[in-house]
Image (tube, helix red, strand yellow):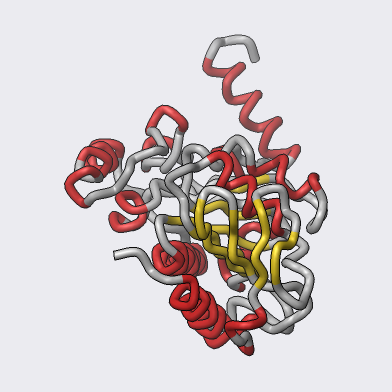
Length: 264
């Protein structure tokens, strides 16, 4: 049964309070939207705490970003929401916040792409990292384009996280999963590093996704999530599955390869 506009307004207000109470936003951070129909979006306004929203504070815009109703200006990051709706007809709601731990990973240039939690492999595949873009400009949306078609949650470098789904609660729960995953990954790293699942187990989890009703957009061919075989011991995993090494470590690796080939 389809919800009325008033019910959808109540949903956004409820999600705004939840993300505020969880500490995923501060002051006037974050934004939330719901697709009303093929031509309209209901979204949060700019310069207001999402934890203190009233139903009448919300704005209705068209798909070009023009305000149709509401007393305030729409969120300055509305273009990001509209891009997601344009690229993903299956998506009906978008939630963008700054959860501290997952945003910490984004600020250090690290995607959440290790296969360490079965529920995350099944539900999200992994959470890639999009390059930084100036908030409120087209520079914010461009880095997201390669990831939107294949993933349902994206880390935004030095910014935060955006999640989306068939309704605003699904988008919120994906955000909750991302932050929970990040917290566990951080604890594992503090304890010496997470042990990723082997490829054979990752394959099994991917095969089970349809059984759990998950629309499996991300692919193993994309190198995400990274299985144990993909991660050299002691190497910090960076965005897009790349690894960072120091100059000294790189020299040592080259010398080792040369020695193994009888060159050095």
